[in-house]
Length: 232
Image 1 (cartoon, rainbow, N blue to C red):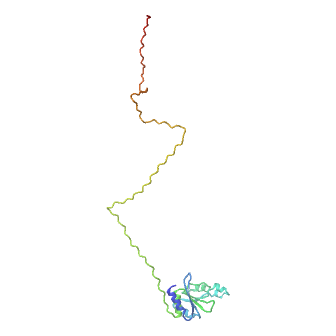
Image 2: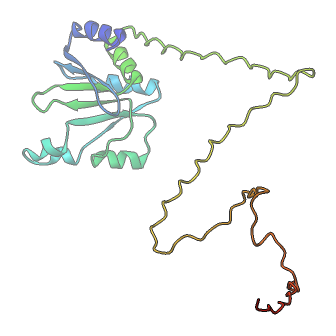
Image 3: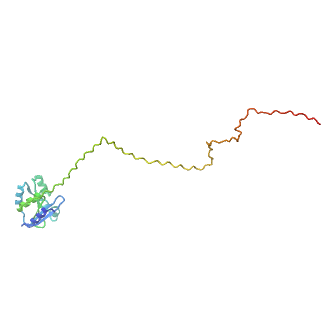
């Protein structure tokens, strides 16, 4: 609760003719209720409303005539509404119980013979103070929103002509792991022989048949003729 609202509650509570002062919060906006312990002078309030460009009109004529407890269900006791220049259509709908936008409204206490003045905004409170003959002090304006200083623009740094362009090293991919050879499956077929590439050394004392060339024509030895032997 603001300090201005608390001040108004304190100063109106002890004014002659006022029984109770309440601050009633609503989702659509807070209201300032003043319950009187005597009848309100409707002629005086109507004249003060006209000076400020408002009109006091009757409200809820049809639902207020309902019988029994049905009245308390469908009618909240409001019988006058102070609005800004209402036309004929607004007055007709107001008599049916459709409440127009206004600055204040006056309701009859369903549990007593006196009225309740309900101010809907600051203009309604100012009209109430004029009716009571009190000095109206407007609330202070809301504090201005803090201004966030704009960040100074940082000029972009110009690249140096003499400085070589910087190169970003590329990431080296990891070396691929060679595949592991699978073990050969055992087989009954013997592996093929691979000729050895190591040169064989032949000593001079060793002779092989393959080293001696074969003669094309065989050489035959001459046979010696045997002489007959004489008996002695």
